Image (cartoon, rainbow, N blue to C red; front, side, top):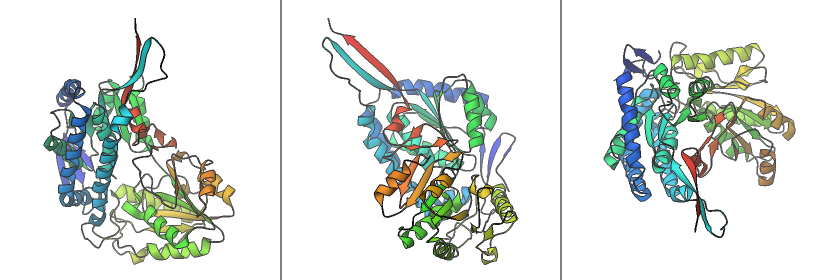
Length: 467
């Protein structure tokens, strides 16, 4: 059961039942050339549109998604397996991020004026960079795409969106929403592409900036394709996000939030919790309470409103998590969940029972390599120093969460963490007012916040001597 591309067609294979849910024709070389040319022409006109008018169009766009929430939620469930009860959260997140990025556009794009100098007028202006190529993933197909689409358009760029082959309908909804909102033709386009055609577009320098969200391996291919083109690249890649539960943590809150952080979206979140370190004074009680809560999940067809855990996106993804678990057990880890309690889980499909592992260490793949599935390892630590050492023992660095009632301690320890975001008493959330960024192999660049506008614009200095 996997997503395939037969001849010139994209096929989305639903993890719900293995059926072909969506089939779309892939763009050919003529389609691609026409799209790029029309995007270039449209951008030159769009950049002359006032910021106020751009804002109105983006505001009207969100009304479409709000009005179509029920339909889009069902489609997302079919395409990638998320329980329908939770799909509305993604649309609400799209609305929140859009409205925030629109609200800060004027200040983010305003001229930067240095100290006055007699006889001169000097300022730095942020200008649109041109065509932004957004290559979006399947796990949060709306949220990840909107992170670049809205600020790119607000800054005066045109956008070509390549949605994941697993969630093609989300790309079509973006185009439809902006069309109805009054966006001029060709300013936002959606193309269904083969991987090789995506690389060819980037390598040809046909676009000016690439926003990519996906795996580290795919990010390396994107960067290689862009080498020598001087096109900008923003990469949001993998995560192996840790949590540290201090001795003074609010016990009930930390257990509840970390279970959700680890297993929401079947663990298929780049900022989901994949490893937990607990102060030894709380460890036994924490594991007991954590496991008890995990057992309450209902693994079933995601179209059922009572389902709280759906299938992972495809069988190969499930097999990767199963193999990580098998390898960990072989090295001494113990499982806390009897998979027989989840009868819908089957080695032959994408339905994967949640799993909690203890007696784990960093010789095990499950504690060092991204799992992207419903499994988490929990380790006891003796103090803060050990926790920091283990949390930093990764080649990825997207987020890290600290669970304590001492804000000063959290800030001080957060300074020592090699990560893009430090959370305290929460996890797995993107605040659009803060930069979404990472370190190490997690990628480069930043989306959201005022910083999200910087990589989508070009600075131009004006140095005017007054005679």
